[in-house]
Length: 106
Length: 106
DNA sequence: TAAATTTGGACAAAATTTGACCAATGACAC
DNA sequence: GTGTCATTGGTCAAATTTTGTCCAAATTTA
Image (cartoon, rainbow over all chains, first blue to last red; front, side, top):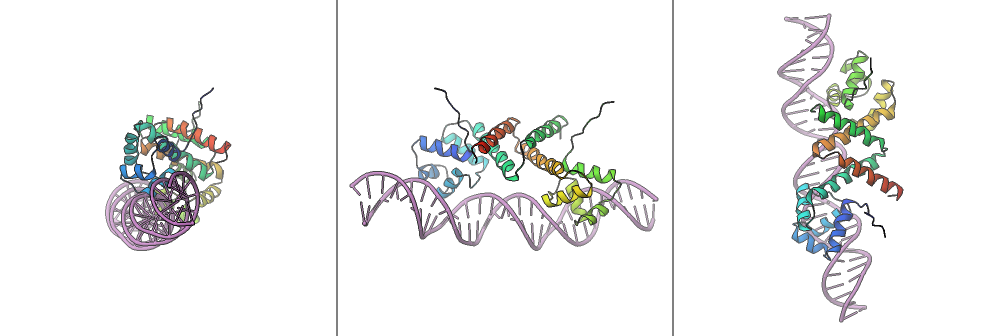
């Protein structure tokens, strides 16, 4: 049987972590200083948490902070491309620009 | 002699277009329904024009609308990556997500 | 140095995002 | 059915971010 790494959104990932741990919104929310409803919205990608909070929740679920943060950030890029109705070539162009700006130090 | 396509920002490109045409901020601004100072800021990437305005200015300089729009959009992605201090792998991750969401229709 | 051009600060207005509250809905046990 | 716990989703004020305008300062050009 082949294993698939399912591509999820940041919010869905949080939800999976929570459900896998068998926890309710209330439990996770109160332990992470956030309103229940706000956590629910974050899990549905209707609100964007702060980076600080992402680090906190990563610790809470004992997963890598940077990885979770990257998942959040790549999600944001993906959403932006999709709702600008840009095509994927935009990403290549952006990559060129980033490389250029890094090597020519801004 | 080799030709280089210099990678510029959206704003710099606008400025180059204007200067190549030998026009002042005032001339371009008044012909495109925008404040002089605002145009200056756009050229310095301190303000983001609307997509509508980008189409208008593309027509004005007789260049391809979509291409200029893409230049603007890729700039935005590049800026975002740079000031989040993300690394380039974010782009690959974002690409995966976009492809996934497109094929699984959202 | 005068005029034209460009820069950049200040700031109110507009737009967007957030966080909190709470009623409605759903799910499950009794 | 009723009650309880969990989740959803709407509303809305507050906070934050972005925009556009005005204008004075700085720079360039003639």
